[in-house]
Image 1 (cartoon, helix red, strand yellow):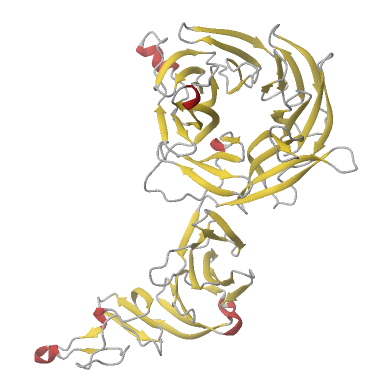
Image 2 (cartoon, rainbow, N blue to C red; image 1 turned 180 degrees about the horizontal axis):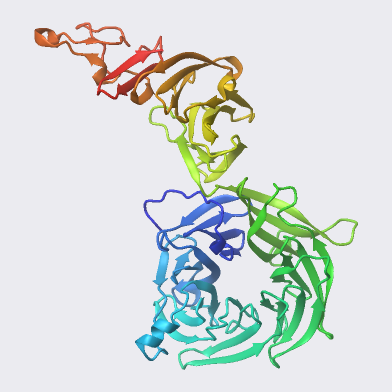
Length: 596
């Protein structure tokens, strides 16, 4: 993990990140760009950010977690959670969740089965890591599926390749799952209906068996699968069909068509521990549950939860990541003997071009007194919009630490970020275009601005926002159309004044009165190159008289009671009469200051 990074605040996911999510216990791990964020789900607190090993020009494409004994032997072995991540450049990184340290970096290996350099160039293909699974009886081996159909089995602790092959490159698999009953058995699929079964019984001896089957998927654009709770049973979803497949005989044993009134399938989220229930997600965000009639191997829908994660959200919201898992809730507080029930949990991210993204955790529970199930939102984490356009830390006292940061975004929102906990405390939709500048007036008030061109004039929007109430006060309603764009805003430390800087050289000084009512008090038309509010006069303000009287320097502005030599000490200020001062520089090289 990068030593320079103190804390990462995740933004919304990119398209390459949508499959990069996994959960282990109450911890969710998901990829954003080239970074991996670890979140505790019950409190929605960011507990770690893993970065530095994946190139900044890459995106994390897949994630998987496993419990592994990394050191010691027998009862002294230490069991830790290991995270494996793959990216768009073909690099696999393994990390320990508890320490956030890197175990190994595994670049995509050259293929020993290629016989000539020309064939290597012709067969290279996409490098992206499509999927990662653990294999072996103790999960000490890692299987990586690459975009060109290359499959590699790694000893991830030693960083060595134990076995590799290339499957059909023209119709390369893009999805891989592991059997919960036999960790040496893997199934790889592509969207054209091909199924590959790999069984790694003895890697050291090169004993990896392969079987290939074909499913008719002419009316579907994708295929996903998940192993069932019974031996040789594989559940398969096409866009409008749910299949039961016998991997022992290599044939479908049951088929169920999805009713046209329902949105097409998107993926299989999970299967109950007894194998009786199957949870699927649809393209519109709904979740359906299916029961399996084992003698006939036919699925039947038992209920559907509509538009999970999208209901009540802004128009245009879409699903990003989505991951489902089972959680066993104990009633008597004793995990060993207490009674409990098995509940299904779903973790997902949402994306919206105008409002940003969220990480949401849902539980799927039976409805009281009714048939069917409902989704309950358990927790939610606001994610930063991907493009932040302005940034300002909150002022602190002498020696104090920065706790809050105000960020303006391309979406026109203000995000109040708590950098101590790594969470976004408040979000305000203030502007209709990108926020170009933001400043703290006081701990409860922000001033921000945006500027957009409309024909030959500019719409400069300046807003005062009160954090605790969310109320806004628009500034300069009398002149919403200007001939020059607004380029900056400055705020005094007292919170009583602010300055607006325009591109044409005009600078407006404003005073903030009671109830956030602003009043313009002065307009300056000077060729400023820099202008800033200060609490005390810096050294350059002292006016030096040329000639023999230079030693008798006299300050341009008296900030403190004069000392024995009649001069104020630089950097001091009269505590009984604080003043708002502005220092500036001009295009001719002169510098100065004035008191408002």
